[in-house]
Amino acid sequence: MSLKHLLPPNIYEVIDRAGISTVKQIVILSIWDIKKSTNLCVDDILLLKNIVTNNICPISTSGNDLKSVNNNLLKISTGCSSIDNQLNGGLLKGTITEVYGESASGKTQLALQITLTNWAHGCVYICTEDVFPSKRFEEMKMNLPQFDPKIDYGKNIYVEHITEAKDLMSCISIRSPKLLAQNDLSLIVIDSIAAPFRCESTNYVKRAEDLREIATVLTTLAQQFNLAVLCINQVTASFEDASSVLPSLGLAWSNMVTTRLWLKKTLKTFDAIQLLKTKNQLDASDHRVANSHSYSD
Image 1: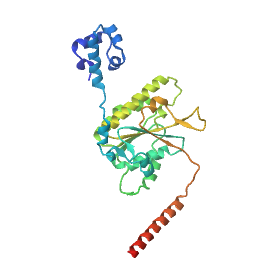
Image 2 (image 1 turned 90 degrees about the vertical axis):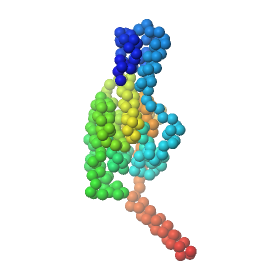
Image 3 (image 1 turned 180 degrees about the vertical axis):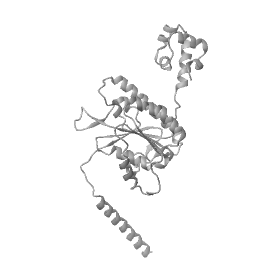
């Protein structure tokens, strides 16, 4: 809604003549600054600020309201029981979850796995670095627990390729809401959030503002359409510990993230065949124990 239709006519005419024409100006400018520019009394300025802030203020949810909702309805599974257990059920809807780690640590692999696990509910997959890994997607879908070759697992997955920050903002603020209004989806994946901001520009203030705006739009979409947002992030070296790494994009982005997962390479190797044999042996042992108990009864 425009300020002209939102404010009383007498107040709108005064601030319009003073060149105060945006919501941002009304919120940021102090009472003294507005009084100096418009000559309005303090009561009128307080009324002006209250009307504007009440109109743009996002809907808040109390902790009691969240507790009253079934936890399972607020989470989507990652397809990995260990990660789901750590997250108390999976990715939390209405929030941003970040996965960061070094190159080849499995970030895209995890993103594809979560996408495949929730294929029936639909997903928006935004690629900012490489093209969508369709070959790997096809290989992974064949390992789904209940894989059916007759099912098209990609029919509810909408892929977008983006390279610049302004295009990313356009995608999530204009095209995505239209898509989400027409389709009941459960997930938005951005792989990766850092790539559009990886440039030689040193205007870190502008970058921080853009990141906060993107995070705000993503959180709004997540809450409005009851879905989860998964953002893949790169890493940067830590000055305090040379052997450690930190998520890219700094505090401007970190403060907007609700949950953060760190994927790390390991030198440990596991023999999948041996693990399967061990599991089968344990299952067989449990079966024999169960049978012996039934005979003794």
